[in-house]
Image 1 (cartoon, helix red, strand yellow):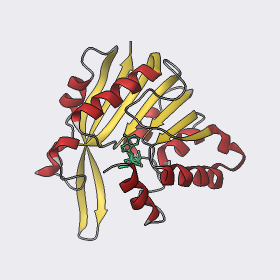
Image 2 (cartoon, rainbow, N blue to C red):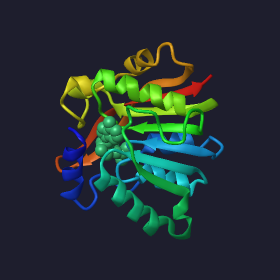
Image 3 (cartoon, helix red, strand yellow):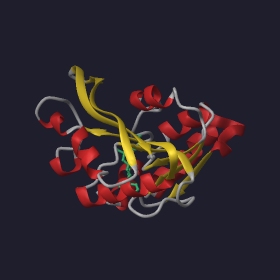
Length: 205
Ligand SMILES: C[S@@+](CC[C@H](N)C(=O)[O-])C[C@H]1O[C@@H](n2cnc3c(N)ncnc32)[C@H](O)[C@@H]1O
């Protein structure tokens, strides 16, 4: 899918994703001291808005302008006078992040689904955007969903297991603090299911 496809998907539905933050974002970011964060491919801003509620100052980017407009409206509605804690911007994840190198304490990727070369480029930009001691949190659909789990894209090339994410940052100034597959319970029309998510927390060295 390109930015136009995502624009059309967002325009077709009031809220494509849930309003709640991803459970692993909440779990892994809660122990961190709030600072500056960039939420890359932030969609409708559920995680960016939650980060702002925890005291983070957030730049939230997406290449879909429809998503960014919605994120801005949702931040205003949810955060009110604190809406300025989220700065929504149209930006491509595979090029240098707004703010410049080492500008952030946290870079978040939550279900950014790109083929390998673009995914590596996006990870490299995310690492570059974080200052030493900061974190890069990458969450995505595990390839194991194709056989054992539920949901997510059916194209293997945009699915990553933890070792593949760690391999993609080989040579970059990061060390892995966690690299796991986690179970995410999902309620579906056919009853409860379990999605398998890749959750990788990197610390910038
Ligand atoms: C599955 S959604 C996830 C949205 C959000 N992170 C969340 O968890 O709710 C994937 C998002 O990635 C965005 N995206 C895909 N490729 C991108 C790229 N190269 N640069 C910026 N955004 C991109 C899409 O527009 C879409 O909003």
